[in-house]
Image (spheres, rainbow, N blue to C red):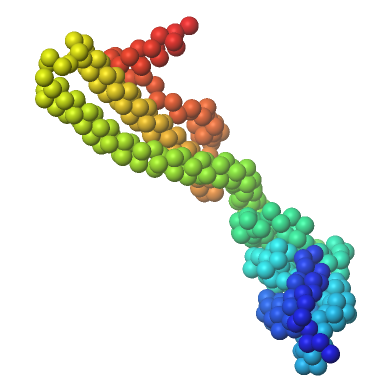
Amino acid sequence: MQNGTSKTVSVETVDGTHLVVRSWPQVIKWIDEVRDGWRWINGTRGSDPANIRHYIPQRLAAARDEMERFSNEARTLNELPGIFERHLLDGYCPPHPKSERGQDLRHIQEVGGSEAALFAFGLLQGLVNISHIQNNDHWRGAALALNPELLASAGSVDRFKTERASFIRAARELSEFVSSQEAERADQWGKAFADAGSAAGVWGRTLTRRWLRTALRARRRERQAMEKLHATDTAFTEKMALKAPVEYWEKKRDRHGKAEFWARLWVLFYFPIALASIGSAFWFTGQYLLTTPTTTLPPGIYIIASAGLASTAGLLFWAGRLLTKLYLSQHHLRQDADERATMTTTYLALSAEQAPAEGDRQIILAALFRSTPDGIVKEEGGLDPSIAAALGKFLAKP
């Protein structure tokens, strides 16, 4: 009988990946990783329509026991596909925690809770559907399972939902309070009217006035609560609308910041090297001309040497000026992106505290969405005496 280590066996797992192993210990290690990754379901409480918290540990334990028994009996790995078919390929088998689906479910558990993660797993595996939803945790798990992109902003959405729920609860309590007051006053009115005819009129008017005052106070409190609820809803809507611009300008600021860093390094390294090169060229040329007898030098050597040194110096300084402009361009673009991101974040903070006036809102939004600068450093200062600058200005004319 073979010991299962003479060849490689590949088995397709429930998450669509292929497990390639050469021995039973490798398979047992893999199943232990799955059990450790799903150990959090042991302490799960709450509603579980498909009884997932019971079947997952049962499937994994049965599969591991059978793998360990086959390993002790020195069976070949050809038995591995059968184990997967019996225990690890139905809807109750969880994915590996390092797989894409396993990581998504773990993230849902961290953000929405264990009950939401269990319902999301059951929904993805076809064990439950929307009709099985029984509470808010099930709704949260279904939403995060069907829309994974919501995981990045689930924390912010939960906070705003909590605030909105508190305001709605306060409004509902006020409404119930008004209803109870109305019922109480109606009972008092009926009793007073039935006890005595003359006294009923007096008590009726008194109770009516009290009821009106109570109703006015309750409606005033309800109106204030609804105004706060609408303000929270407006802040939530504007935060969601401006979240993408904030991320865009922050990414653009980081990108231009990196470009500015490298451009500054180029400038800092270039100018010392350029100055040293110009000085060396002047020194070696002067030494050569001064130490060489004039009788052996051509007549125009001084003109040629002067022109060559001047051209070299002009070219080096022109390149340095270009590098400086590139650095200033990235610097301006980074500052602009940083200002826009800061203004957007500040506007969101102001919107969360109180709704800004329409005029102020238009001014802030106009500043946020003004035309993006191209980063080109415009010509400033006096005339540039270099040949390259003169030629560039001449070609730029229409």
